Every structure is written in C-alpha cells, then in structure tokens.
Length: 334
Image (cartoon, rainbow, N blue to C red; front, side):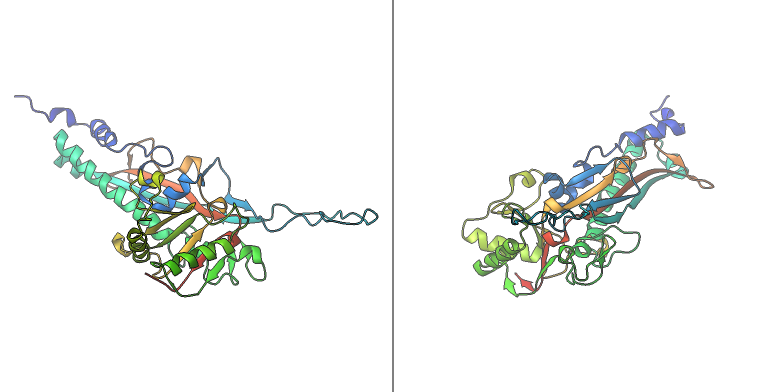
C-alpha cells in the first residue's frame, strides 16, 4: 500500500519543504529586528537606514557653524574662507552571518512530511533566538573586536576625551565628545527623574533637537516603573507597545531597558549605567543586498560533506554624525 513518504525521496522536495518553513525575513522591522529594543526604537524613529552600496558608512560631521557668517560694520571686509562642511566620520561595514544545515542523514531519518517540517521549524526557532541575542551582545560590548560593529558604549564612551571615533581623534574636539555624568542619583525617585532630565536638557543640541531615547538596565528600569506606578504616572509608548516592548514615555522621551540576563553569557548593559541617545544623530545602517536575508537561492551543498546549508547574512554598523548629542550617566541606583 502506498505511504505518505514516497514524495520525499528527492533532495529537491526536501529543500522545498524546509524552505517553505524558512521564509525571507523581509523588510526592516520584520523578523528579528523587532526582538531587539535598540533596533526597534531606531526603526520607529526613522533612524534605520538602508544604503545602496559603498565601501564604508560615512557621516558628515556636524561640528560647527560656517565661520564666514558674522555681524559686522558695513565698512568691514567680508570673510571668504574655505569651509569643510562634510568632515567625515567613517564606519567600516561589518558582516554578520549564519547558516541552518540539513545533513543527508537528517534527510534519511525524516522521510515523513510532518517530521521534516518539525525538524526545520526547530532549526528556525533556534536561529530566531540566536540572531537577536548576538546583535544585543554586539550592541552593548564595551570593547568591540575588529570584526564586530560599533557598540553603544564605543559610540557613547565613559571616557570621551580620549581615543578615536569614526577614524577621528576625540582629543581636544568637543563635537566628538559625548556627555558623561558621574553624579550619583536614584532612578526610582523624584530626584532621579529630575537628574536624568537635567542631563538630557544640558546635552540638547537645540530645544527641539535633544536626546529622545533612554536605555538602562532592567534593575534601574524596574525602579522607575515602581516609582511612576505609585504616582499613577506610568505611561507606555503606544508604538513600541504594539511590538510587545515594555516602555515608558517621559515627555517626548522613550524609556526602556536591555536585558542583562540574555542567553549565552553575552555582553550586556553595564549595571548602574543609563545611556541617552539622540536618534536624530544615531543610525543603524545596512547595505540593501545584505539586509537580514536568507540566501534567496536556497540550500547550497557544503563541499566534501553530507551537509547542505541555508545561509543568512547582514552587512551593517551603528553610526553617528554628532557624538556630542548623546550622554551616559554612571553610578545610578534603582
């Protein structure tokens, strides 16, 4: 009597089954992007940018005004000096890859359709857990390696008067130096809310160009939640709530946390730190043809083995065009 396994005797049928359960992640904001608060927040703020191509991501540095403009006597000589309006911060394009592998032995063991789909779904679940965890780890790495993207601590440094950013030296250049506050305060108290807002206002570029994202540890966030809930002033951000993120709105500022207990012992946000990000000057950029995609050609054979792999890749980096627009507060308690 015929069985339901006869159709699964060829590689092409197996590949079709597996690929059916592993769709392309699609446009920005789909798939794993909405598993990471930083990426999701930047997308909602329209700071998630796709680039057609290039050797690197570079940002014209907004560092100072044109010195040819001034108030003067009508008999004075006008300034006519050459200007460089686009001094560049350069960020190398970083590569993130992965693969889901089906072995010929797996094919032989999973002739039944339900078993093939169940096995493929398990592999996809594993990937969808691994990818955002790796990105979260990279974004909060205090000392990124040569192959890793810029992290929030590297762009918003606790020692902003030393080192380099985007290929330029921070030394002696205020526009390249983010703000740092070492004043101790309690996040879950009136004085703490006042302190964090004071830092935000002092760090503003203009009154309507200021830090609009606070990211802190889960402990500090819980302290703020408890304080505001007691006052019945806990108001979540509706856009982020649709993506299942727990957030707070403080005025026009989006407040949330990154988990310090991610799987795999990954890099996490430093305890007692609060990062203030001005999303107008902070972007996540990706190459168009390396935008969180699975290999559109499907499975490829791995030479000299019984494996076939479905590859995944992203070409990306975190960038800024004005380090001065951001800040980090240290020594904050819950």
